[in-house]
Image 1 (cartoon, rainbow, N blue to C red):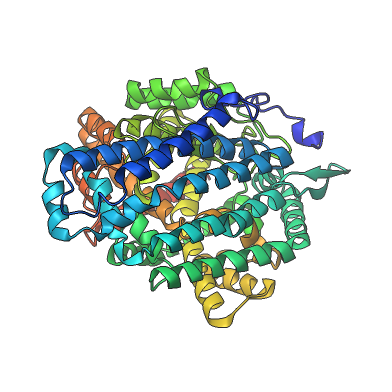
Image 2: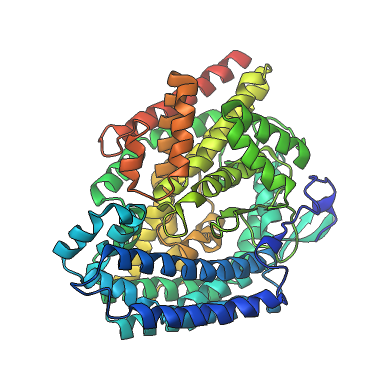
Length: 605
């Protein structure tokens, strides 16, 4: 890694996670034992329950026993896969890690062959029989899980077909996703900084887009583009292959629209989603207003795409990792000591991987692993305020995942739509704490501008990314394999709708769809960010109005995990996402923040 990139220490050097609560390492003998135990229990499960689920004689007691046994086996699969995924994310350049991930995926597929019959028998059971079973109180802890399994009835195939699809995915979609990670996370971006030619990682090159020096931002954007273009052939092929794979799955499983499968897993209906998306698009004028202000604050004539994240004041202060930790925990504690105590565990027990290093995957995430263990947080901390916010975001996820473990493996996870609730709420807590304690008008303006840019990226940009995905999937289905230039044009069209006349897109920016992992790993994930942000603005408004009375209801919401539908759980905290005016309420709060930024800027002059 380039010396200049490490010239300013972030304090995150050496901050890596301890995965020993899962396994001590790739050579851990427990891995082999767990794989053997997995196969033994999977085969025994099939022998015990096959033919007994799709039966008029099925009793609540037998069904409960089967679900509990299946959950234990599934959690063992989840533990192995989580460990393999986390090890690979930590160093995608190590062939041993990639081979281990592939091996665990293949072993998991073998085990699932003995489990698949359960879901298929369950969905074929008559509605009358199912209603009778689920009315029994003994099945209450798994009622939502069992009901959701039934929702997939029109989209499931025969057992033999399901087994083939699962096994082929190891050399199909899963293999191409791994290839994307290995290619992108090991690209070195060449750039000349401070008179020296350097070679930076994706994380480091993207960090330059936030630099106060416009020449560095421009050079960073150019270097990013060159690196992406050098790998455009393989990245374009990966995109084409996975989009077509998605199309084939939709056809095989009788999903009509490319987004239908995601909407089903997110437990969101088309009407609610369309209301969310169109509400955001109707408010794109906020982007134009804000970037008009930022253009004046920066004192530049033309506002290009690489200027969007420039700090409005030349502040290159590094926020040490320890200081970032204090800011986050203090903000959490003011809201809920319980929330802060859980977040403290992540620091004390080395559940966080924060340092920037070669081969490490870019971006950030919190992985919930399994209820018998705990979540792990992954980030690339470079010491900027946005890194503090990112760490707060992922710790919000971590707290959510930690609390929801009580729901068990099958119901601890939430749909993506509500999965972003705790993470975005955590960011809002940190932001408002900083705003309350800051007295300098310039610093306050910098804080609110930074937060607005984060929210724009979470609300409006994620709608743009979703619209791009829609156009990409439809174009691939209608036109066949797409060229890099074809996809570039779709990307430019989607972004221009938001940027309007406020931002001038360079030709380089047309290529930047290539590095976004959500398109690869989780198609149509992005709208969940918009959902989460606007939901949180509403929740935070309730907290401001209700005070501490709100806190236990919020903690209960996080602890509920996925034990019921999102709209049902959210009603418990007074939120109705089916109300057509709901999304506009969040957008109105955002508009108030834009007005506050305009007023602050005027007062400083």
